[in-house]
Image (cartoon, helix red, strand yellow):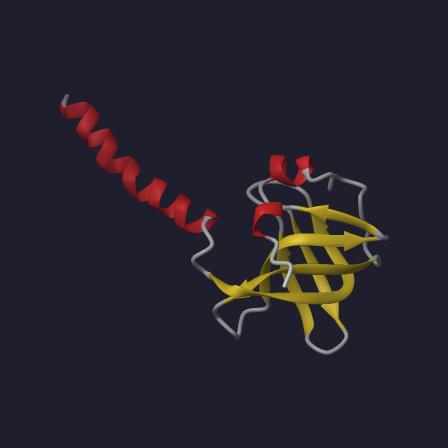
Length: 123
């Protein structure tokens, strides 16, 4: 019993850190549209990411869902390449100095990928 209690206490900071990382508390409630050119693509854990260069605001980090969720949306390795134009809709970081967003939908090459369909705001 004591071992279980100690293990639980040791795991709590790890689990709470993971929940904070995977939550949306760091992002604004309002969604923005980001248009640009893909400069880097990472497909892997914990979240696939795209570095997107915009015409007026430099390079943004666009986070997608976890790898399985992103794959279920249809976005897999080879779905996009560096140099492709992209439109991303999502929630930007509450820290205005950070050019980072969590995408709920991306469109690349005329194909739309709904990463978080339940979070897409249509208005």
